[in-house]
Length: 312
Image 1 (spheres, rainbow, N blue to C red):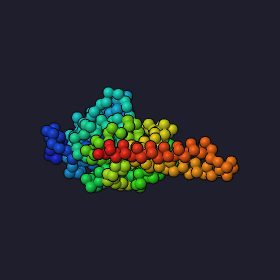
Image 2: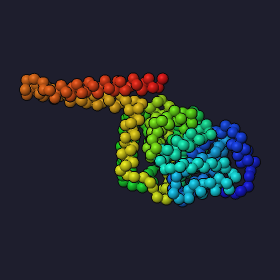
Image 3: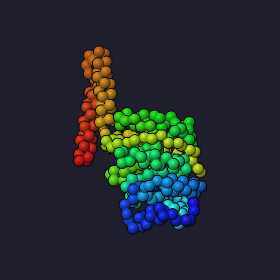
Image 4: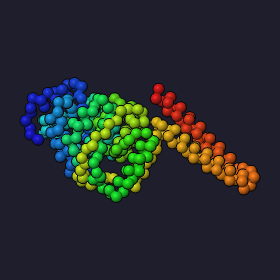
């Protein structure tokens, strides 16, 4: 990047300084990404400068132990073409915590989230922004699996995505993409439910879908990350599964409780018929299963009432 201020760049920085409403905040959560952060910032700045959006670039450093934050701060000083801010979190809490910090600090009406590892091309951002504000959330659906442990991540992601599609009743091409655009006022309503870890982007998608917000998917290229992956195959896969179930419990509990109640009732009736044919009477275990299925259904209805009341 050059150090020459163009008139358009100066207007953007001046607007940012005096508090004029920005249209877009490009949020880049980062943790130990010193190998990639400068390349990502250069790509983002070049792409956003080619648009007409009033924007800012916001780097949230999640207490990195390397030079990530320092490099981002140096870039913000030397790069006059693009308004870059850097926020340093005092302790490491995870990608979700960094995103929540950035969303709260964002000045743009729309927040673009982009991973700091270079796996997503910044050139995809304008394509996603085309669908805003018609949609409340626009996601980049990755083409291919370029991450680590593809033999594990591919099947696991497919199974979890299919479960999420069933529970939400929507087609979800990419459940945990790290490239997305959201309306800031909408995502602020769900910050309370977003976890601090890797499953944060999954939670955002499910929260929007479960509450009737318009979500769009756009195919985007996906590259191998720069540096070492922080993905934990067992812990993070288990976290994805629990996130899907937890989110539907928060927003659509009948999708979980009614199938369980129905399967329990069928099992109880089948066992009752078998017991009656063998012993001539129902057994205590048959009654317990049937009562359990009834209580499960009632618990689901109660959870649904609580969710409906919370939406008001």
